Length: 245
Ligand SMILES: [Zn+2]
Ligand SMILES: [Zn+2]
Image (cartoon, rainbow, N blue to C red; front, top):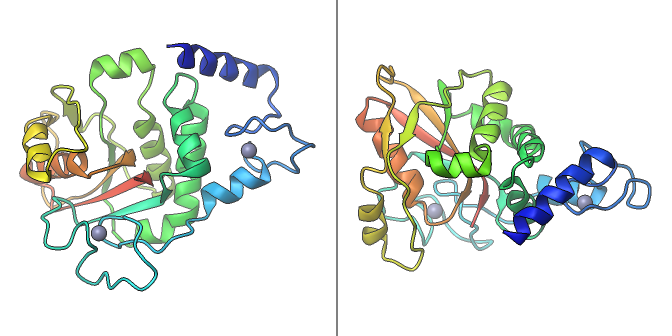
C-alpha cells in the first residue's frame, strides 16, 4: 500500500515536473536528451533485447541453442498458442518499467511501452497476419482497484501500429486466479481452467488473434486464454508480451 502511495505521488509529481524520465526519474539535461519521455539509458534498455530468444515461447535461450522445435521450456509442450513475441526480458529497466505501469497513472508509460513494442517488433508481429488484437483481461476487481488494465493499454497501441481491429472486451475473466509459479505445469493449467470466456456474439471463425499481456511467466495464463479463443473458433493465436520472465 505504501508503495502504491509512493508511486501515485511520483506520478502526480510527473505531471508537475514533466522532464523526469518515466522509468528512473532522472532529470532531463542532467541525464542527456530524452526520447519519448525516457532518458538515454532507459530508452536504450527498453528498446534493446540483449539475448537470443526462443521463437515459439519467447524465453531467453543460450547463444547456440537449436530452437527449431522449441527450447528447453516449450519443446514437446502444447502451448495453446502458435508463438509468442516479446519486447524484452523481465529484468533491469524493462522490469522497472513494467512494475511502474501497474499503478494508476502508469497508463502513459504503458502506452509508451506499447508504441515502443510495435516500433521494435512491428515487422515480426505483422508477419503473423493478425486479424484482431485483444488483451488478457484483469478480473474486474483487480481492474477497479488498479484503475486500468495495463495489458489493454499495450494492446491498443499494438492494434494501432498494426492497423488491426482492437477488441478489449473479447475475453472476459470469469474469476481471479492466484498463480503458483512453483506448481507443476499440469497443476497450473488445471488451476486456470475456465478462468476466461469469450464475449457473447464475438465472431472468431478463421481469425488470427494477437493476445497481449504485460508479462509472461509460466505461460499458463496465456495458454488458457488462447485455448478459450480457439475453442470459440479462432484459427490461430499469437501472444505479444512486453516482458518474458
Ligand atoms: Zn531513465
Ligand atoms: Zn521456447
